[in-house]
Length: 51
Image (cartoon, rainbow, N blue to C red; front, side, top):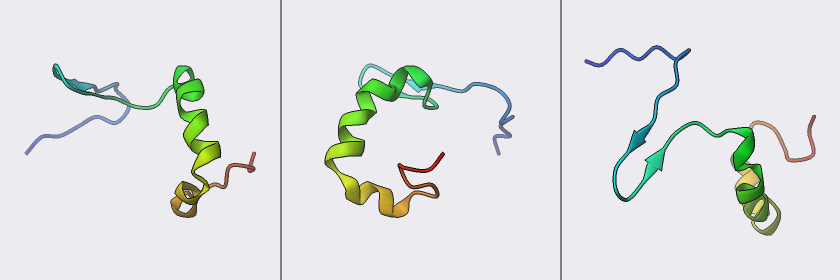
């Protein structure tokens, strides 16, 4: 079994995909989907208009 330390940064990457935690730099790329596909917010713990 693999024991992960969640206070460390992990990334999984190969020639097709990069899986990593979301960062502030991702905001512009995700903004389109946040606006154009409001149904994704139905599964969010915080609505897009929360602070």
